[in-house]
Image 1 (tube, one colour):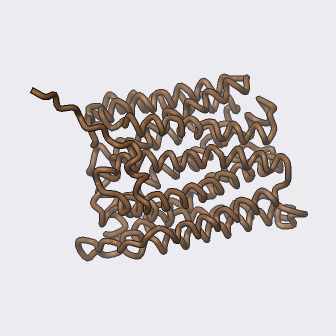
Image 2 (cartoon, rainbow, N blue to C red):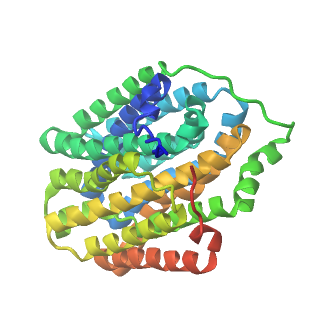
Image 3 (tube, rainbow, N blue to C red):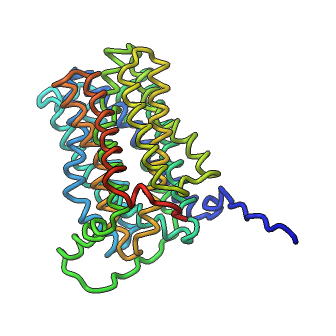
Length: 416
């Protein structure tokens, strides 16, 4: 009797779909530009203020407007044309960073008069743009792929973002280190405009109408109700939320680069790139070996590794070791991202994708900015190194809690 061999899945299947490739290319360019600009912004703000809390306030100034508008962004993505919303948000982001670059260049009269407050206000406007962009992008993603490629697409989507985030910060640090703030922001804004024109190549598909008529309040809260009644989804989002909220050390990297490791803006760019480099390498591995088998176990292991590597980074006084620890945080984080995105894409009905995505963005993506504020605040109160150790330790506590009290996540098996 002839042995039946299992069919080997194509790890590049999603990338063979042109619409998906065009979408990821636009996303790559936009992410590269934003990461580059944010690296320069963080260094410049710390250079001006020498205040750790000021770094945290950059994240808070973006996160609060994002949280306040994200549910409306999800409603808009499920009601209007998602593609037009995404395009408008890209342009708004470019305008915001162009304004920040103008404020920080030359004699910078606004900053001389008001400090960094005008920068925080403009970053807040970019947070509003992101509140509409993120649900639109996440809703477009599954429209470009058949359902059986969602996990593969989530892997390559993560790889796209992480690759751009590897090169963007390093390039931003190098450009700023060898030129000036005006050149750095100009380059970033030009790339954002290129991303806008690349996005025009993504074929427009109609937004699937809602299943029933709803009031604005019902529409805004539908995503919240769906997430909170789907325990596996809620657990995955919550686990990622608390890990990033407490465990992220990225906001304090200017302090480590300047005061502890003494490596300057070029070193800062390399440190910013380290976790994303780890994510990229892990992403290519996950394309061949998806983490969606025994997904719950893999998610808990990944977040545990993330917390342990964060503590290792805090204790390091060596640039190379610090780079390795940050690299490992990226390795573990990408496993978490792929599993969570696959859960979201496979369990969410299409007419609700924008609103469910907006809830995910509020709980997880905004935790990067809220986490930045938490890091800045705890660093001011406890000191830089103790605050990062505290964050990594809290991440490990959250994993233990999830393992003990959320059996559905612990026992989650195959997502494919």
